[in-house]
Length: 384
Ligand SMILES: [Zn+2]
Image (cartoon, rainbow, N blue to C red; front, side, top):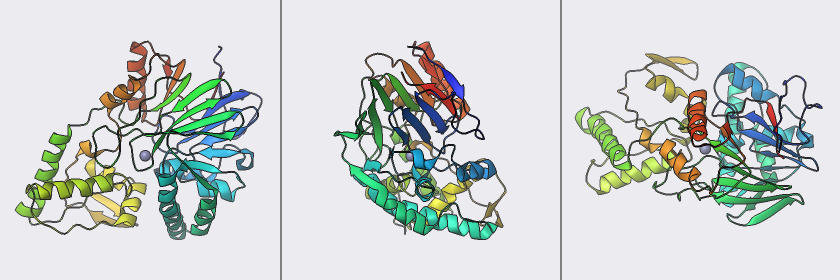
């Protein structure tokens, strides 16, 4: 097998340098948002993921322009509902994509709430900034008709030359690992992998072989604290604020995923008598908005003032960062999942991670004699 690598300039679109049967990294390459991988199988062309880029002007510009013709895509395979994996589906459909979007039933149900909510946020943002929205609630609602629910563990044939099995990724409700065969090549995409041992979702399902593997690396260079330590920290933070300071606790969390875990842990701590009774409010639209303007990170990084919907707000809160509540596998858990492969894939691409995290995981894989690389955005590679 010969590996060829080409880069596609965003302004030139598809050209002769693109491998006939290949994979192009359109997002979540050296970063954690905008997940999108285009598979060109000669007789068919499809996307894995169609995620929104998040964070700043560069992300906003990338969201406006696809690096391919949406009408040329036959179908989309979606690992889970998080907006950085699904959030450009309404724009894809509005710009001419007319095929099915395959996802688990739970993912389809979540998208029924999340995509119109995202459309609402796009409309509000556009209104504030005086420009056309990326898409509207109506676009998002229309694109829901493209969703086709599939079951875990059942092989589907979205095209005669493509077979696909969705396996449980244990990240959020409905999340999946995509286990594909494209022509004669087996291609596995980890999606976002969950941390084993968490409540509500299962542990990630093992996969034993692949010719080509795409593995996420959000925490490729970090270990979470144990669940016991995490709950100790969480109980301390709640008691310190609610009992000692008579204050309120605000917990920014992904609206889907971590919010459910946080509620579960609050109930558990209360049942065990480790925290007192208190009112708990879930403000889901706020959680989504907070996520979009990754606000939590700036506060954690020590910002004295932040802007919320354009208004400067001084930060007077005491900040606790409790990393063990993440819905993403940490480095040991990633290696636990990778350890199920009976032999190294012919090629592993480390995706969905900031450069340091992705490079750290890549280097550790190379030390184990895996052929691993971190792709650049718009890089195209052969699949055969
Ligand atoms: Zn996710």
